[in-house]
Length: 123
Image (cartoon, rainbow, N blue to C red):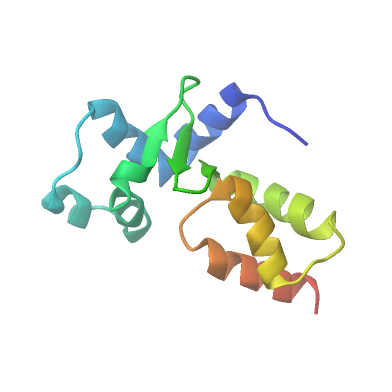
């Protein structure tokens, strides 16, 4: 299943963590240390990656590393990512599933969530 950029943007805006990061990005300046500390740990963790984060021409929040550009996945879409890249790919193990997800996607605590999902799903 694929989503339009507009659907992804709306889902990011509805996500309690990503909407805060989008708000900071809309201000056009990096949050200071006090602002970062005042946020939920998941928000703070993303804000600490400020230079890797950008909003594309469609208003979608992305993360750029030296090797890839990743879509920041709203919590509501994570089960779909797991289904597509774990179940539909033949129930791959934790590391392979995580590699496939990392190629295109990112969210806080991703490795821990993938490990939990794969071990719960495949036991």
